[in-house]
Image (cartoon, rainbow, N blue to C red; front, side, top):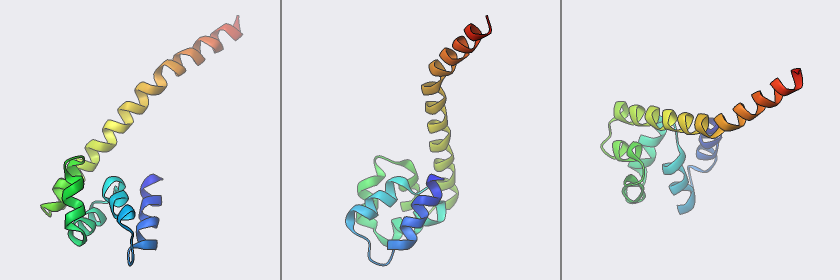
Length: 102
């Protein structure tokens, strides 16, 4: 869902983006091809964001395969963080459900 929303923003404003939009795209795009295009179109901004996101660094080097790998790792990392965040709540809900059965 986030991927589609960021893509929509990109296509809506790609002809006259603000500096903030360009930085947003470089931080949030999850589509390898669009990240490559963005890094190529705005190299100064891409260089500024490359230190914080390996997918941008890969896009600067024009490696679509590497960009895709980096994006996959980002997604895995976020899914792991999400799972860890919800784990205690899931446990608590399970305990509540067990208590209701008694």
